[in-house]
Amino acid sequence: MRELCMPIGLSEEDLERIDAIIGARKKIKRGETLYRNGDRFNNLYAIRTGFFKTCITSEDGRDQVTGFQMAGEVIGLDGIVNDQHTCDAVALEDAEICAMPFAQIEDLSREVNALQHHVHKIMSREIVREHGVMLLLGSMRAEERLAAFLLNLAQRLHARGFSQSELILRMTREEIGSFLGLKLETVSRTFSRFVDEGIVEVKQRHVRIVNTSALQEIVNPK
Image (cartoon, rainbow, N blue to C red; front, side, top):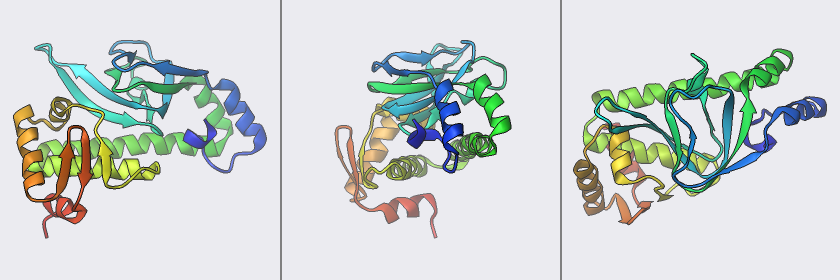
């Protein structure tokens, strides 16, 4: 737990105080919901293993994917504002999380500056990611959206010690389309175009990025 989401530089005494408030590990099966829209907000959740999607149900009953979260990241921040969650968090594969009671973390962070700074960093990272998504959906063409999505996913996985070019997509193409504001056919057609141009290799859910600079060029043309 300490390696996953706790700041470096805490004393042994501070670490023990944090350990005392962290909930037991909990396993979530693929397809199960960690929390639902409208649930009371009590905890932040550190993802130890596995992959999640967050989604909301639109007025016409369709699921709108709002994000994908992976091992090493923290979810549940959406509940802080109104003390209730504003989306569903669904496991895309068997996962394991640790619950972090927010009220106790808030109390302790007032005494432990390093912890407070760390919580602020987690929140800031989420805000930056939200801005990135808004840019993605607001001004990019389909190929730019998919290229940015693959680059972002590869970067986040690489930061956690995984390959920078080999991706196993835990989400369906339909879920990718929902997140990027694209139809399923558009996602499939764009993947096919990337394959034809030698930018990626695709075998079912396994994606190998062959030409990273070509993806970067699509997102940020010179």
